[in-house]
Length: 494
Image (cartoon, rainbow, N blue to C red):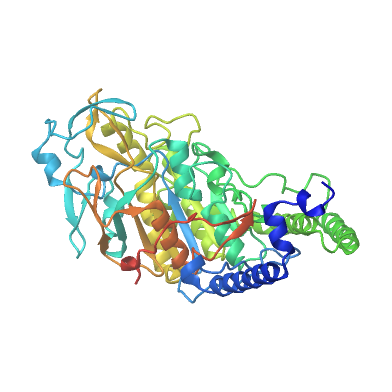
């Protein structure tokens, strides 16, 4: 009982042997060396992360892309509510042939209840442009531009619910709390304009989309990279100089604050949050002069107002048209990311405040198209005319599609996560090109199915960013927009 070895386990006694100790140590050192060698092998552990070198004092300083591409800016036109692909850009003659019938393998129940019969498109399709692309009469102005568009007809998503669908399309995750595409771009690239936000979200005249500010939020990225939201009707708050305060007094106040902030920062040189907060205040000061200029839409010539439609149609169309002019002005000023929303309503739209046409699709989709079509087409044409498409990627998207058959009510189409259409135009993408196909009914992606991960990977690639290497270390995980998925759709690259 007094023998010390009796109190030590069998494995412990083995370590007391000099021969076993040296053997174990040798193997351990070899394993450590092997792990270091394997870590350098991208095929084993993936690509090494690339994190931008960000100066907290100047978080928007322009930064180089991972590789050279023509696109320096991006404009995302987002249509909440799910635009019906089979009534707009995805022509399916089988729907006309099978109209009023219920073919086999159609589910009895979808997202909102029992299914009805196959329904032909509610608008006629016609060949457009030199490419002869079939587009419906619902969007006659955008139809004229199809020779410049690159369509993806085989998109799929993970959800058929709007909040999660918006999250997934705009942040890469169905859950909340993740950075938006725009935040990732400005985190990686900064901005060329020092007097305007790097990322602007132009909300619909009717308000925020279903997932709210999560669509343009910064998530766990530094707060400097969240989108600044305003529109033509509602400029950023708290920028107007108070009555009774002269311009010179205002400038003197700003100068004093800058000196005080600089002195405070000298005392805490390593405080990145403090530096970012001061940088945001300084940007707000610059915006007191830059925002009134950028908001001066009334100074645009009458021909521009007529082209966009600010003087015709419904009040909603006029306000959206002004938002489109604002988007062009922001792109023209070098804002890195502009996100333009066409549709709103956090509590559901039912085709009235967005594209969610569960009933009376013939009327509700027509109402949304009247708002969206002419101003959006004018925006794209205006960017092209001014040469801005040479360096700007334009993306038109929605969260999922709609079913080729009607709902039980006989007048609307339900959500379809298994096939939908988006398009791109501008810097870096092919013109007059269509990628992928849905099946004969537009029910499921059939040729080259493309996930939202693939879509976002491609958008980042077009901005000169490697989606597998652009990351941010958060809670023990190297996070990225595409999670651990996604492949660049190289066939759409110019």
